[in-house]
Length: 310
Ligand code: HMG
Ligand code: MG
Image (tube, rainbow, N blue to C red; front, side, top):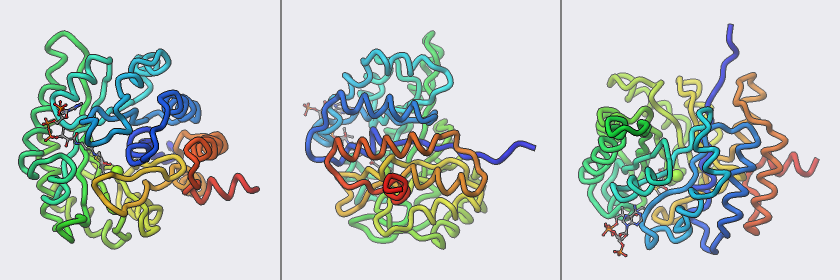
């Protein structure tokens, strides 16, 4: 019998960096990607191709994608390297740079949708569907097919609108799956949810015929609930989780929200449970220490900090 495993989607180079105000040198971003790959992580979100006015930190996305080492990674069939794109312009730039997977993103709620992508939820869904259709059609144009991942933000609450009804999340998940996304990452953008909220939403999606095998968990850690939320989601049946080395992360349009759950903390927890992640925790901890130093910030991973003191 095969031992149980989970897939970790490392979002440090994208979600992790997008909210850092001081400009991070492109070389540091590239070094981060290289070091993360060397830990055994096989899914790493490289960057986003979004309006440089919306997210100035990632305006060097082209330089990142043009790097020789990144190009070899993009050619490696064992690696999954999604790039976040909000529209056709972003998709076009990603394809030009040899990207084989993109992530489209919508919010379940109107307030965050307007703030983040300057349109309503339904307009955001229509845009994401157009991007997905174009990406999936690339094969017919004689190129390789681009895989499409989807994000639904504000699954529990919105910074402007308050609590999110489950039905709003369901609607977005259904639409994105129908658009051809192979997986939908459920984002607690504000990091306000707790395990009972996770259980309740996943049970609701399941009874409404959403296969849990198509879902991933993306938990921010504002209230310190993210590790517990991941475990709860795992016991409900999810096996894919987004996280950031050193707990980096946040969104410029979600004021007050903290970083993603730390990758080190997830690897430690799953290791202890005998669940394989394919990631070398010692190496990962070194990456967390290194990047925290580069960015002059406190390492937000409890495991990373504890292991480094030892
Ligand atoms: P807009 O102003 O409505 O659209 O923005 P626009 O088409 O008028 O474009 C404005 C400017 O951006 C133009 O430049 C475009 O050319 C340029 P100008 O003519 O003014 O010089 N532009 C682009 N440049 C590069 N790449 C592109 C692109 N598109 C337009 N793809 C838009 C609408 C969606 C573009 C904008 O609001 C945007 O880029 N938003 C992205 C915001 C973002 O990246 N947020 C963080 C990621 S989401 C997140 O963190 C949540 C997540 O982690 C899950 C969770 O935690 O819940 C995924
Ligand atoms: Mg996020």
